[in-house]
Image 1 (cartoon, rainbow, N blue to C red):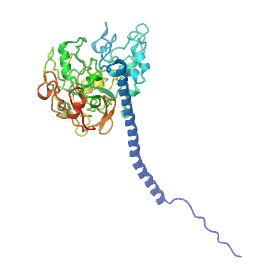
Image 2 (cartoon, helix red, strand yellow; image 1 turned 90 degrees about the horizontal axis):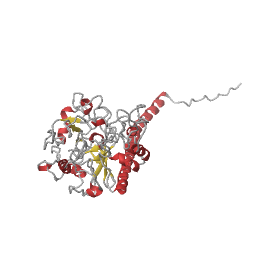
Image 3 (cartoon, rainbow, N blue to C red; image 1 turned 60 degrees about the horizontal axis):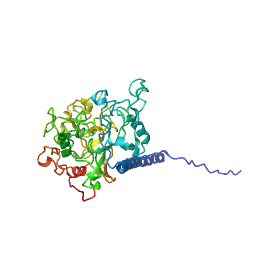
Image 4 (cartoon, rainbow, N blue to C red; image 1 turned 180 degrees about the horizontal axis):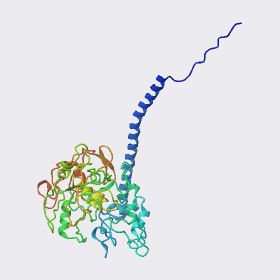
Length: 430
């Protein structure tokens, strides 16, 4: 009998070596792909951030078309009567609103504007008596931005948030990643030509005229006609990073005691909040291993000095407040430089809210940040922009030499971009 030889079945599976090779190739591809995905995501976030800024620029132009002026930084109602302690006015906002309050109707914030501009019943702590109750509604245009129970101030406004900034929630009231540009000198940036009772004087007005050289001036009406250097040559707002509670030197301002007194007011308070941007950096307080942060031994960051009830007063924490730490930039130190403020403030009170200082633009992007020009263009300014003489003291009324009133900005191209009428124009693309 003949037997047929059946062919042996051949296995179609992978060998162990082949399987390991495939896994290794997939691992390499994933390793190459992830950075590209992250870069693409950040590029999308950065574009969205720029688009938000364009919306703010368009809102400013529409506001100017409607009212023939720019929105006023540090504006609103007076103190009112029986309105509580100085920082927590409830029967008036004490002229402390940022430009963003007035801009709300111009960037799809009409509903929030209606809440603020009319008497409002409601509070965040659920209280049934006192301000915000049915029997005692919040006053029209709201209390001081320092009051924590007023719902509109705690509302997160999407247009004012950059997607690259991960900060969210308390202790911030309502974060902002955009801020008004006040120019190249911080003096009286938190108060303008008014004292703590909102009384103007010619003496204070002269001081402000000498130092506040930006597109916006605290508590003063400004318009495009005041920007004599040209709208395309003048920064009117800048991007800022909000504080994350990590002692970042850009968002947790250092208290600077090295003020240069060019002229004293009543009470002997200095009129220049800082001697120079370099004094602000205070390298002794910077962590040697993480130069973007204050070291654990640094004793004067704002979060350390004003611990406890002052933890809600760091960079970008209140979009509705016009005070420097929350919604202002100066073009002194280059973008993403250390922030600082003067301990002895300009009103002679113990409040941190109105203290001026070096508050430069900053961001969570790599290498720089966005700025908004007067013509509505959004530009990306690198950290390496020419910032001139960082040892120069700010321009002030009784300043001398390069700090004398009317001088060209001592802070190079960056300082020139921040001034509105110093006859400094930009001839090249930046």
